[in-house]
Image 1 (cartoon, one colour):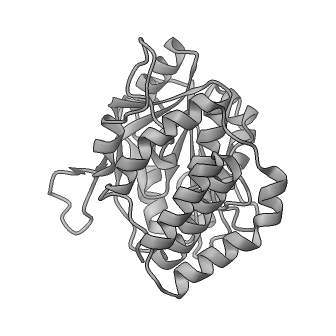
Image 2 (tube, rainbow, N blue to C red):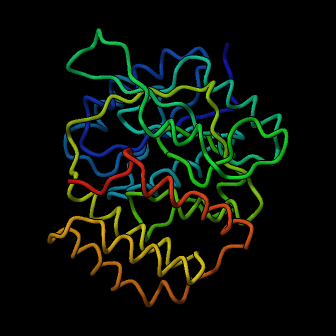
Length: 304
């Protein structure tokens, strides 16, 4: 069932074992998708292992850690219509890539389709995977959708579990180098929606996630808070800017990590003000419907 409509982009940094496991899973897919790995300056031999064990994979080594923008680099290398994102600890279930391509073929106004995510426990490999708590929020998204959309409309997407229309991704500028990594999807999602694209959850697609223990939750929290502030300040209505900023001030952990996140965000205000561009009213109104579910979410917490 070879299907060359969708390629897979994997970004990685110092997680060789997880990367090789994911590449092994992708190699078994019946679609036989082209796979591009962007090695974000790993120092653990990841690039050499890919060359040796997966010679059919296109390997890009930019020489520095590009964060999420490694996906932009992969997108420039491809000429297929669709690109599936995969983290080095996530992989697509057989048939899901073809199903995503079918959805995007049939719905030319859809830019992204996000899959159902199931989480595997590496300590209990025989245990069935459990649905990620974020899935309930995707399934129950309150964003108004037109008739005929192939699933609930979303306000954003999850990069490690999404297939994107490459023409829309490129036209929107891809992921922002300023945000680097950590909640980087939201700004791109806003810009796609501003251009009239729909973002969709598709329950018939599945991505598996086996969370890597090799992560820096403190850095991820710092960047997540900073990037949420920047995205809000860059695109949202002034009243929303005040409300969301105040909410973060009240709810994030009161420690040095949060203080540094706010300081980094404040230091970026000059470029934020230069590049600020308000969302169309219809997009702003849709995003406001997501604020209460996000505030009460158990799957969205600034921890670490």
